Image (cartoon, rainbow, N blue to C red):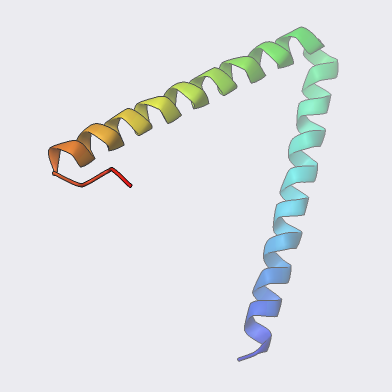
Length: 74
C-alpha cells in the first residue's frame, strides 16, 4: 500500500501538467487568431466574474453564519 500515493500523486502531477500545457497552447493560438485584445478582454471578464462570485459567497457565508448564531469573534 505504500506505492499507491506515489503512483496516484505522479499521475495527478502528469495530468495537471499536460492539461496546463494544452490550455496555455490553446489560449496562445486563440490570441494569435483573434488578436491579443480579445483574449485580454475575455480574461478580464472571467476575472471580474470570479471576484464577484467570491464576494457573493463571502456575504452569503457571513449572513448565514450570523443567522445560525455562530460566534464570529476571536
